[in-house]
Picture 1: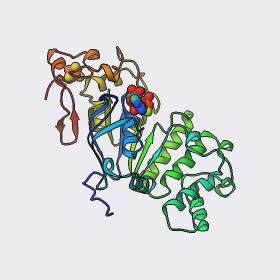
Picture 2: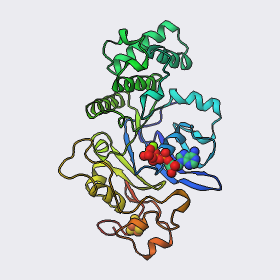
Picture 3: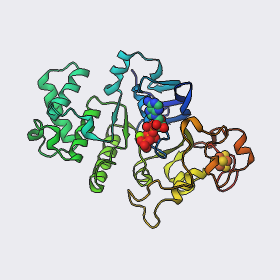
Picture 4: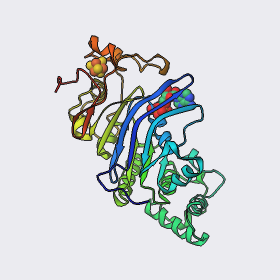
Length: 328
Ligand SMILES: Nc1ncnc2c1ncn2[C@@H]1O[C@H](COP(=O)(O)OP(=O)(O)OP(=O)(O)O)[C@@H](O)[C@H]1O
Ligand code: SF4
Ligand SMILES: [Mg+2]
């Protein structure tokens, strides 16, 4: 497959909907893109559909969920691929890092043999070549004394070191898209910063598209180029990270920012906090704007018809009739 030109998105999620049961929507009309060499921060309250979106891109949704819409990665629509083609794409073109590194690793295999196994599954190389490449990967993710660590089992490593192994596995076959779902929330703050720096360095060096899912606006500001804000299964605002966080237009984005602790912009300080009310359950979402029951700007028209995601400028989009700062 040829590398897409830089102006074309690497990943394009087009009108993606995910539902269960009798069509109860979990994710609705989701649109966003990730370009090569770009980090996109996907944020939103718990339960808004961030992980489901990531799993849909990886072709790993649980079987009880149905999808509609398209997910284009480097020219292939993921939603149309059979299980074999998907398996081939996972690892070689897209890879995912999960929140809890211990569950991502096999407890009864040494960390070295876990990476070797992945390399052998995706490349025509010998075991010795795979072992050599594993050591290079361990050095790339800065595992100290890599050769001595090769035969360690996961439980002998700290949380941060385990996450480095998971990252080594994820990048082993040079994917063009890396999805990291809350990759640092299980780690303490200093280790979090190290892992984020590592991800950013790998992303720049390999010109990866990185989709970073997080609750933490401080992390997004620190690491991402663009931000996609989700609320109750929909994108409500997106754009360049500094523009959106310095001048939020959606009342939900503004609420998230207002709720953060004041006086500090360090990573970890801008956590999503309380906005009055709660996110509606998937089966009880309002017919008009999904944020209307909690929105300080709500008016009668907001209840009638759900606002579309409309462009605000060449690189910003907004789903709101009465944005913060007034209509354009
Ligand atoms: N297999 C499933 N069947 C039915 N509903 C599901 C299923 N998996 C997830 N959900 C529901 O879909 C919604 C979105 O879940 P998701 O895990 O994507 O949220 P999230 O944004 O990642 O939240 P968090 O920040 O807590 O990780 C939630 O309401 C969840 O309960
Ligand atoms: S459309 Fe209306 S209710 Fe929805 S976010 Fe905008 S102002 Fe608030
Ligand atoms: Mg999640």
